[in-house]
Image 1 (cartoon, rainbow, N blue to C red):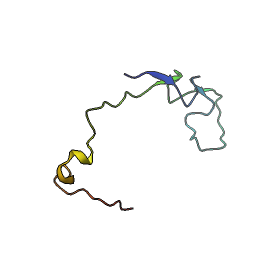
Image 2: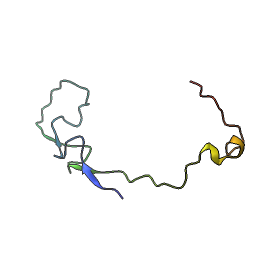
Image 3: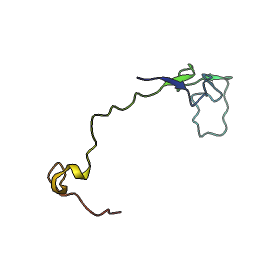
Length: 83
């Protein structure tokens, strides 16, 4: 189940000082409108919903689960670790 968490962009205020049409890496800009502006990440609500947890389906297989060190497709598992 998702739970609400504080928006990391606006720190829960729902407002930001930079206009939404200005990219975050722009150091200076000129605009004819005054802020603050609604936060685009949370829609001005001040919170976002956390993603639901990933369901655990079952046991994660290990090399011991395969007969003779073979993978499910029948190929032999590599014993070296190439870089």
